[in-house]
Amino acid sequence: MFKNKSSRDSHLVVDALIGPQVVIRGDVVFSGGLYVEGRIEGRVIAEEGAKAVLTLAEQGHIEGEVRASVVVLSGRMDGDVHAGERIELTPTARVNGNVHYQVVEMGAGAQLNGRLVHAAAMAALPSPEAVAMQEKAEAAEA
Image (cartoon, rainbow, N blue to C red; front, side, top):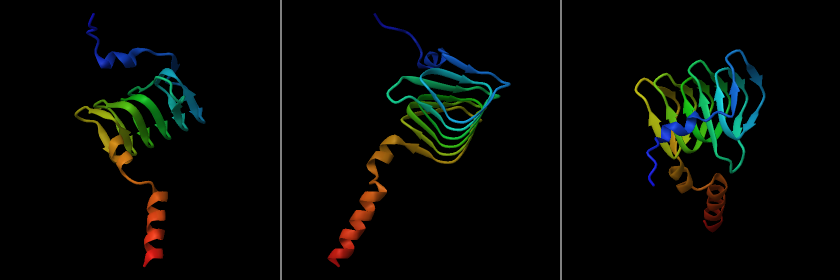
């Protein structure tokens, strides 16, 4: 009746593997589980609405933006990360970029050179267009 399964087990399903000797130059679009041991120079984007789990292995490296519902980082990440549900930074993670998250788990030793941005905080902020329109309206009234 009740499942006694850890949320950590959800990232163990691998549909695609990028091996340690592989270098991809270009964007990667995926769904399901993607496990990266190699290097990606480009964006890694989950298909819209798909349940997607990206796992970056300790020796893996991504240079570019990442967008997925669940992201587990153990390697080096140069770029912004957008995790729709949750992100896990293991103790060996090295992130140079901003991390946008709903739920974050960060192990002791993980390095983040950037900002942690909660998704609710971004939703509460007005868009740049709305701010510009408000400023124009206030200037017109003055």
